[in-house]
Length: 261
Ligand SMILES: Cc1cc2nc3c(=O)[nH]c(=O)nc-3n(C[C@H](O)[C@H](O)[C@H](O)COP(=O)(O)OP(=O)(O)OC[C@H]3O[C@@H](n4cnc5c(N)ncnc54)[C@H](O)[C@@H]3O)c2cc1C
Ligand code: FES
Image (cartoon, rainbow, N blue to C red; front, side):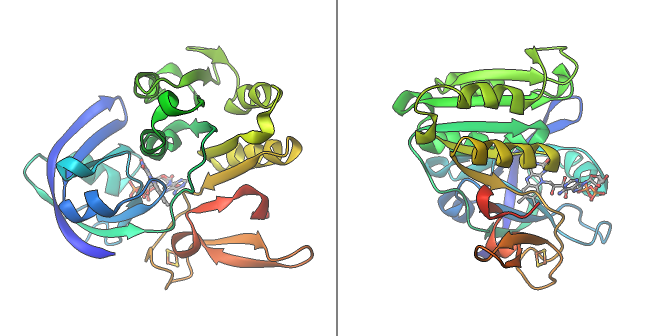
């Protein structure tokens, strides 16, 4: 982990509330792994003071660059959206554990939660080297992200919208349940990131169908390095006891079966 000044190569709006930022930094591009995160100082002044966590969306080690896909939701992400190519960003990373790779996977992304899962799919070699199925969900058509990127990788993609304005009407977990009902689904690993309610439902399905499942938790964070105790998650210690782990230090990726909801 290092503190670096990464150069902004581009920062483009890709949908009404979503931006893609490409950053150049040799150290981060070489060392970031899918599922890890970086802590970004989003403004030059003191508002907001705290860094914000973001997962790498794509990593191009050979070119020394990586990308973040982010949703503008508050002060930090608004400040980020106003940054221009050529400016520098103060970043600490890589932080956290990252995903453990599996051969046969189902990726489930809800809303902006799909962003860090593209880096994972690219690292796995997409659907070309193995069977990769992807479920992308959002409230409406405008918030569906990365569909083409996953298709370009050869993955089988199912799109779900809450209002039925695009793809199929329903939740990501409706599509996931159907996929898990196919023969040999126990050989798959589910990778998911999204709203808490979706993550809990994914965890319950993985338990019901005896499928391994890794969840990337996007909790609120302050220090990002396990010092402030501001990002606890309740996990099973053994069959009877539980304990608290820090999402930033012990995660952000956790086996679904360990989490106490
Ligand atoms: C490991 C990790 C990886 C992440 N990766 C990405 C990413 O790739 N792209 C991306 O857009 N965001 C990502 N996030 C979330 C991102 O950090 C927050 O959206 C950002 O901190 C918001 O800052 P803000 O000042 O703009 O908004 P704030 O003013 O802090 O919040 C604005 C609104 O968003 C809500 N909010 C903020 N953070 C969260 C959160 N973590 N969970 C649920 N609601 C929240 C608040 O309740 C509030 O309503 C990630 C978070 C973690 C922990
Ligand atoms: S953010 Fe401080 S302990 Fe996790």
